[in-house]
Image (tube, one colour):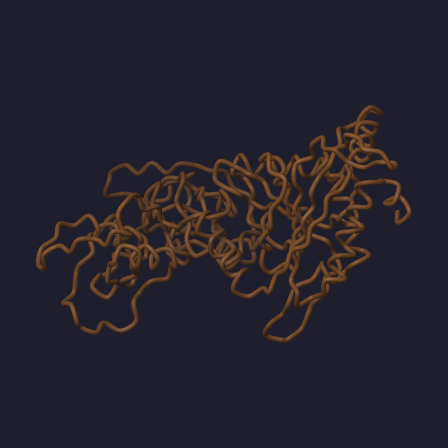
Length: 439
C-alpha cells in the first residue's frame, strides 16, 4: 500500500513565522518528484518556491492562493510509492519511501530519485488518489466565540502578526476559536471577527486617535519595524559625520570606466573603501553576544546594502566582500538589486550581514543618522555627491562634496575608533591613492 506522507510549511529562516500562498505549482492527482517545487509562497522577505521532500501522488492540498499559513501547518499530502495508473489500495509499483534533504530549513529526508511530473486521472470522482491521513482544514471556517470571562488557557496563536492585528483592533483572542489545525487562530479568524456584525453589547465609539486609515504592520514593513525597534532598544548607538571632497574619486571612476570592461558603480568604490577601512578597524565588523557577555569580531565582511524596491526597503548581503574587487562588487550589487526588485531574493540573500552601507544620496538628501541593522555594530551612510564651494589648494573652488555619517554600537568601540574609521574612509574618498597603499 502507498504510504501517505504529510508535508508541512517549513521554517523559511530568520524568525519568519508565516507565509502567503502565491501560486500552487501542483494539483491533487499530480505525480511529483522528490525535491520538486510544489508551491510558491511569499514571506515578509522574499518569494520562495518550496520543494517537497517526498515523491509520489499528491492527495490533498491545504490552503488557497492568497491565504497565509503559519510555519508547521500542512501544505500537501503525498502518497509515496503510488504511480500513474495505480488503483487505490493497490500495491505500489515503485519502492521509494523517503526523499532528499536538499531543501529548506527544518525538514527533509535522506534518499533521492528522479521522476517526471505526471497527472493521475481517476476514472471517477470516487476513485481518486489515496485519501490523506486527515481531511484538509476548511479554507475559511468562521471563528466561534466562547463566553466572555471563561478561561480558555493559553491562546493558540503562533504568529506575532496575528497578535498585533488583534491588539490594534481590540479583538479578544480568548473569545475566538481558531479554524486552524488543533484550534490555531489564524489571521482569517481575526479578520472574520472584525467583519462579523455586532450582537450583544452596544458598539463603543473609537477614541479620536483610532480613527482614520489603519495600515497593519505586516509583511516586510512589519519585519523592518521590529528589527529597527529592537536596534533602538538594545544598541547604545552614536553617530559621527564628516564632509569629504569626492572630486578625485569621481574622476577615478570615470577613468576606470573609460578604460573598457564592465562599468564600476560609485557604490562599489565606496564598498571597496569600506572593506579596507574594516581591515584597519575590525571592531566595527562585529556583533555583541549578550547571553555570553562577549563582543564577537567576525573574520569575513558580509556587506549589506540598502535597496529600495516596490515592496519596501530591503538589505541584500554581499558575502565575503573583503575579497572582491570593485568590478566584482559592482556586478554583485547589480545582480542582487535586480533580484530584490523582482521579489526573487532568497532568505539567505538577506541574512548574515556584518556591516551595512546605506547610500541614501539617491533620494536627493545630504545627510542622515542611520539606525544600525541589528545585530551588526555599525552602518555607513552616504549622502548625495553635489557641487559645492570648497577650499582646495588654498583657494575657493567648486568641488564634488559628499557627507558621510557613521552610526556605531558604543559597546564595541569608543569614539576614537569610530572617528578613525570614518576619517580613513573620507581620506580614501578625497584621495583614492590612499587606498592603494593598503592593497
